[in-house]
Length: 284
Image (cartoon, rainbow, N blue to C red; front, side, top):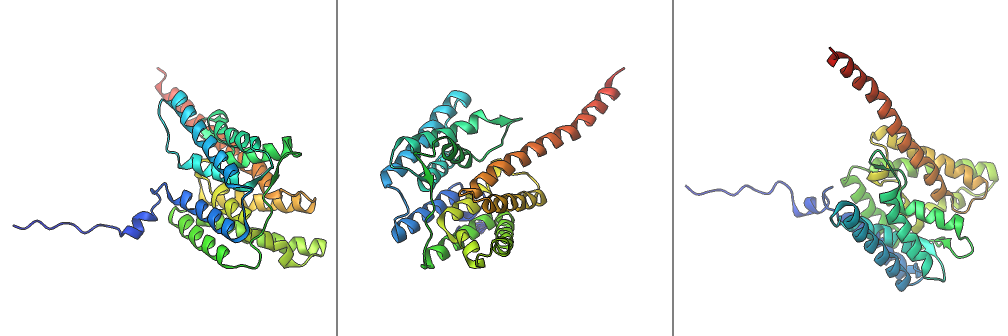
């Protein structure tokens, strides 16, 4: 009898865009870097970005070996390093190294009940902007009138977040941002397009496809995730109305950890009565 080989359950395309492919996110963030650099010279310099990536990977390897006895998958470290390299602006090299080191160290040092509170890149960039404003700034360039970089990044980013089951987070934030942009325009008298335009820039591509969708630093329910990013957009609007230049970073740094901490606390409260009940039943 001839043995028949079972047909593969998914195509090569499906396997590549599966949630298990850890290289999807690095591919997307690299596409943002390449498209932005070729179009507008997005980076401060390749050497500074390389410094940020190298320090991130180095700290991930060292801390992983010291604390867990193994080297973790380096995709996360690469994303953190390249995010710092893209988002940070400084004529010096040391801010890139310090920012990357802070991002990776925060993954190991700032935890509650085994969970991260802050997105590493978001936390480290906010810390640098607040503590060393005379040395650093954040990316503020736009794509200009060239639509192809935006189209490529958005198509690839949408496909990836959809395949990993987090498109609802990005969609909720984008809708909320546009709604609040309309409200801001009515409040301050600016044209709606002027208020909405920042979301097409490379900074926001990183923000909506990476920072707010980070599985390690988001709440677990889909409804909760949508509520949280709506609140991020709301706080961002308030900060923008108060002329905060880096409103999205600060909004996420305020709302994100608070939401995760609240979920952890709520989960602890719900499990405590169950444990108490078990103890009562087991007591002779």
